[in-house]
Image (tube, rainbow, N blue to C red; front, side):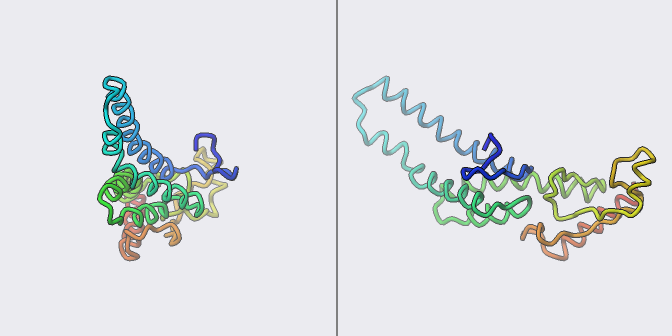
Length: 193
């Protein structure tokens, strides 16, 4: 929601994955909005159009909109954050209804864009692009962080900073061994760079 709160008034944890989910939902709903506008124009241009015209134009959305509402309600109820949103959206993408499956897969693709960006930044450049603590790789606070801050570096940064795999944030599309290799690649790139 734009006001930063769920329907029950609880604050929404900001994050890249939630923004991607909302962007994907908005893109899917743009198709619905444009269909409604074109149907409205057609009805205004020809008031004798039968009701079946409107029913046929909205048939796919009769199945899609409740599925999207279930997805949004489950996101709200579970309060999932970060990579774990991928798993929830992927579950909803396994629908047997083709229109629902294709639309939720479009939303899932938006969410995967965030994961791909984080994985490539970490594995290729050793950069942790995670402003909302959503990625499965996390820095371990260094005992030298205070000294590094005094040397003009950002707080919490140190040359010998360690990183760990945060298992709760690992999406199911990454196996444990791939996640470990991802962690190793990023750490190695930090040493090389």
